[in-house]
Image (tube, rainbow, N blue to C red):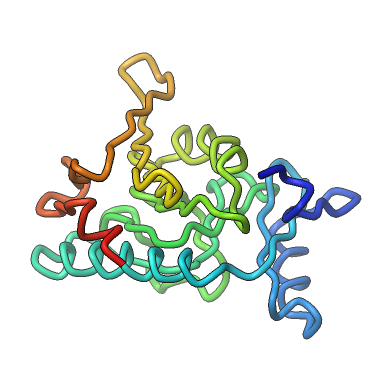
Length: 196
């Protein structure tokens, strides 16, 4: 599906403060916004399947973290790189290790990228758009980006290799997703994720 069917690009250059103001306008209650290098993208509200998968991923992250209490899990929270006010993403679910969390917790957006970011590929978050976001995530602190792809019942696992290049592998429905060294104890068989 092409961007043009679901994604609107706003004219001009915006920063995270602009987005904060825009999302609080009543007419934007049913919209989602992300920012990449000052360009503002508007998306429709997520569909039901997207919402179910996002909730499941958040639950499984929370459940794994609950046992070891290694960090914090968020849902639909805004993250931007610490020194970049021109980029802002809202992963469906995310995990940030304790040592990278700043207290008191920010009332606005988190000034870091999460250790694990979960993106659900759907009409309101196209796959090519999620791929465009990968460098910003992975070169600014994210260790794993999981792209859940409902159409193929698979998850694309993205990380940096030893040379700082983005590597990805696709795990199909027969496989399982691991938190690796980032969230030890997280193990999710994809048959469970896609059962509904």
